Image (cartoon, rainbow over all chains, first blue to last red; front, side, top):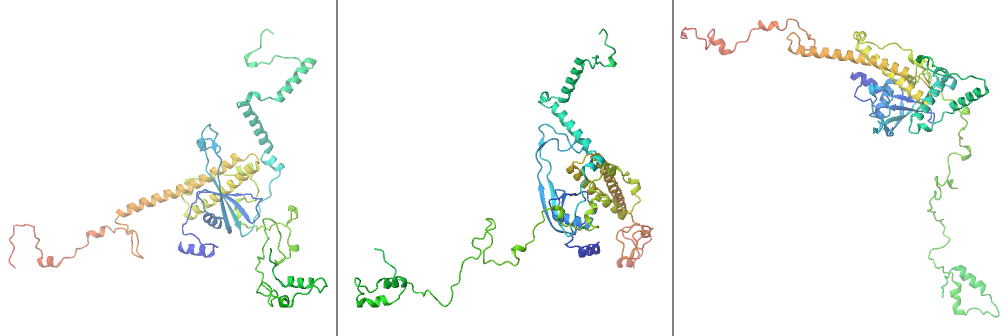
Length: 194
Length: 261
């Protein structure tokens, strides 16, 4: 172990630490940063991470050499919701009055020895085809409208489409193009009399 | 009445003014020496052989904040007219040459896509089970752990990018993939923990076991079968007084009187 450490420290551009972590449980993710030059890369790291930890991790796990690192802690806004979801759900539902500030996020910007450019972004057609972006947008809009109708001023919401269709139907009936038929649930049986 | 400084100029001026005129008469002779002398008020001579050094600040008036520009005396190594200009049009900029073996490509899949589609994310098998991993060596388990760790980073990177772009569906598939990878890591840790408990139980048993030597000499074996049985045949060394007494045992009454030596 001592000889391994010695050879490792001889090759590394910085002083290797003595503490060995064999089975790390944390994870880091790379961000796309078009506003920065290709010499820079930004990562989301655990809150307890330090610049030295990141430099060591990138060198040993990804063979990436860093020139400098700067870190930034992003404070999260107050939210009404349970801090942890039930049964380990990823997006916990909002809960009235349970105000709390979620854990802050730590970002680290690394200056690379060798530049790196992210793969090109996918176009709208590819997203529609592979990720069904159009369908998701429609679903989101529908949910938004439904939630507006369920809110405190839900009675002020007007369905223009329904109004227009009713106007068209009335016109058809008056002009004789369509005949009125009683609309009922066939499960309840036929309407007697009329 | 304001006193006038008697500089040479003022004296000359007064001399020129006082031209010999019929109306104006020359000054009286006893006053001539006063006019002939040129005695400046200042004791230092106005024109000296050595030029006086200017102690002024060379960067006076120069401000980056106020955008004043450079002073005339400032000399730059670069000609201002030949400074490189930024290329504002991104299409005209030179492309960055990225190393094809760059380490950061480890955050992407083998085809190096910007985003993994739900089909790509869903194309995974099940994680390793504890039964399968029990037969694996430490090196294999360690490698598997790190492969899983890098895959977790990859999934998290793609998840974060998909949310930023608001690409669409894929959260469910990513969650399923992450679950399998994490289950592999859990199984690895489970197997290693089992091994440790077995080792710890063996160590505790070895402390009591006479056949096991926990601190063998260099070159010696830790397990010596039959080591505990040898102790019954070992002869105890007799002390000097015991040898002198011979077969006599003190405190054992046999009824016989001790014989005289």
